[in-house]
Length: 327
Length: 253
Image (cartoon, rainbow over all chains, first blue to last red; front, top):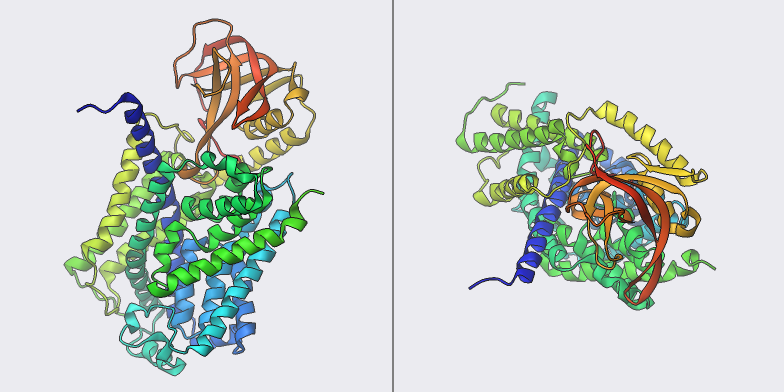
């Protein structure tokens, strides 16, 4: 049996796209995941609970606001924020606080802001403000929903228990127990703590890295068989354009530090709502970090969580139209 | 602090994985191959991550007090090893563009970016010269200007170097003289360039590095039912040249 030349050429292109996508996404995200995991381990070893309690107010809404702002100071993309958000949760901060950080940090970190400004320079500076403003609003709204749901359902336990504390459910563990657990046999010297932080980094990185790579493999397969330029015809209607923006952000799984350039090349000037949907959803949710999120959100809550994020991004795209559309 | 030197096979295997990963990333950066995979602006992050990998390798030998030593399984290691195998295949495939030549110096790279940003800014705003030369620094800005205002640029002389390719929907007998461009990593790489009709029927082969000189004109292309006006070179000369230090990949920002 011989393969027709056209099919052989198509398969060759798909295989080459798969490898290019997998290599690019993996080599770009692995360093950020490692850095995020290391920062998380440093917080675990070196930042006392009382410091975290000083930084994050007891009032849930104020704590959410601090989490939203703190993302500005963490210059890493979405892969690196997952371990940091897990660490905040494991240290006893409200679930809504860690969700706010998880969703907002990739949107408001300095790399994302600068790259969005550069990408849309000459089109409209308002894209930067729309991305930050609507992104923060969406993250606040979702965190607020999580806060309400946590109070209504104390056993929600969205965050999977960390391996170190796996015998105790996160939601049932009072802060004092976390503090006690951290100090039982905890190292005291700087070097010993650093060695322990590196050790935890290795364990957490290998654990979460396999999920990330699994997500990247799915994203690469999707990319190989769904060329982005095949969707240009669907951009004429606002609804389908927003749907395409969300779909491509999810499938392409680009790093939030550079996705603005791709948004501009794909959607501008054809559809600003599609660009906004793409810019907002990608940093919060995509194919590669859905697998990573399964280490943060329990599987049964993953779909509702993803649906709320998608709806918030779509609503933001619609609401931003009067701000962005040329008069 | 009393380091614990306990040579357990599982800890050593983990250390070895991180040291090998650091070595691979280090080789990518030092050989310049990293720019075939990702944007050079990412290199400082790669360096930081590589240092963390080395430290983890050392820490694995020193030993921490984590109770989780020895919990690794093949499912922890295989995905990382799979990625390195796929990257090696990607780099070994012959049709890939070359990035920055070799030996990346992070400080020198930053200086290059400053120079490039300045040139690109000027090329984006200054009046178009009578002879437009597409060099590495101005490539992206000039490309955008010519595609945004093809009529304005028509009639000017142009000099461009790049790889030869052929595109669907281009005029018969024309080639695309272009470079690959990368926003972020190899996952979003594409080709940008100018169409050129050649002075002779002797077309250069696909993938050849050529220099084309000629006069800018325009042509109308129909794509997805829409007509678009695109720039095109009516070439006066076309010949193969030594690529020299020119990059086959353009990094637009």
